[in-house]
Amino acid sequence: AAAATTATSTPATPLRLLIVEAYDRAGRERLASAGCTTASDTFAALLSRICPEDHELRLSYCHPADSVHELAEVGELSRFDGVVWTGSSLTIHEDKPEVTRQIELARRCFQAAVPQYGSCWGLQISATAAGIPCEPNPRGREHGIARGIALTRSGRRHPMFDGCLQTFDGCAAHTDHVAASWAAAPVCRPGVEAEVLASNDFTPVQGLAVRIDGGEFWSVQYHPELDLGEIARLMRLPASRSLLVEQGEYSSEEELLRYSRDLEALAADPSNLELRRRLAVGDDVIDPARRAREIANWLQHLVLPQRRRDLDHVRGPRAEARYPPP
Image (cartoon, rainbow, N blue to C red; front, side):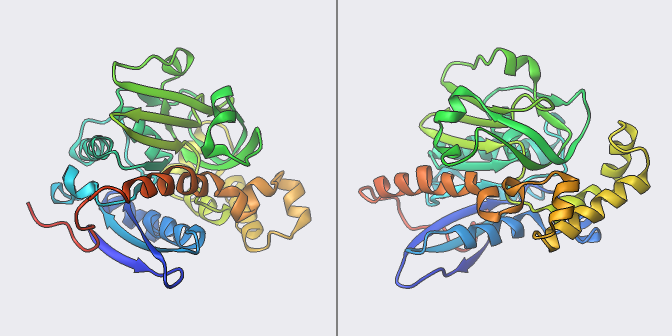
């Protein structure tokens, strides 16, 4: 794990967050080849933008898909105020080290009672760490704009969605999801509490809150951290392109490419009303503050209150640089 520091204002209270870059090296290389921003860099830019002005943001990074040496021990994790999980091109239900190391890391974060947030892969990590099944979505890939995400009764009360509309759209790019059978009857093993917070017609669990051993993990299946330009570039990756055409979302690759270019054009010029009408894109997707409200709420309603409670306890020196080798 490597560290970086971003100052938001001085003097300020340090806010120490760990970003888990969930793509493996090959996945990061594919992103770069398509002109996409690395997932951890996307989150770093967003967190720098939304960090409260009276806090100094200090970011550290780890890449558990790359090496077992990137796994932190529980004692190290307890030095962070929060852990943020990126998306990933890995498959959550595959039994391979790149996946199982990340599930183990999430379990250690629960044990350390460090607040966690995740988008897309992050939701599937939280579910799997809690014993909640995930599977390929039988409808295929949800990519582009996830339509009609509706808050459940629990979601309407949950602080992650404070100030959000009860029904909204979001940027999405995923093929796996929490199993529909579990979503229909969400029973957890002893010691685990989980609430389905949002869903839509395509994906039965679009928002999830999990609690284990005093640790909380808030997550969404869509991508509040991504804008339409990033979603468009992800759409042009060969694997995404072929899947979306194969499942009939687009009649041809040419149609998909035209649509992706329109998304990019709208990201570059959000004031283009003609494009907004044609693509049926509202402020919930266009406006950066509205789009990322779930992540800002995680900071305001989970991370910072827990940090204030922890000030009365000695937690040891904070991890800011590099995990020591095992």
